[in-house]
Length: 65
Image 1 (tube, one colour):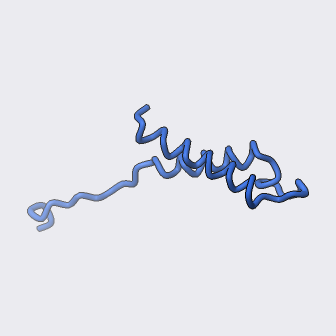
Image 2 (cartoon, one colour):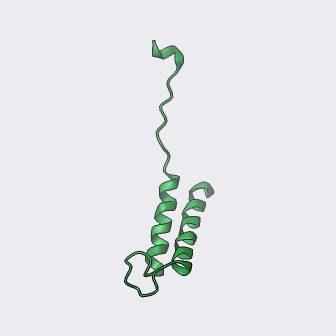
Image 3 (cartoon, helix red, strand yellow):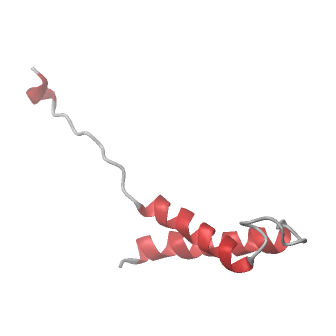
């Protein structure tokens, strides 16, 4: 894997843990933010989604007609 794919996953994990730490549910009743492991995993998953390339349709002007 390249650093361009690993860095967003790592950043998402750090932001997920930061969300748990600073904003998360203190009682533990919230399914995502009640556990540092789950919120870090969700953050990493969002970082992984950022790395998935989107399909771009390249249409050459000569091929249109």
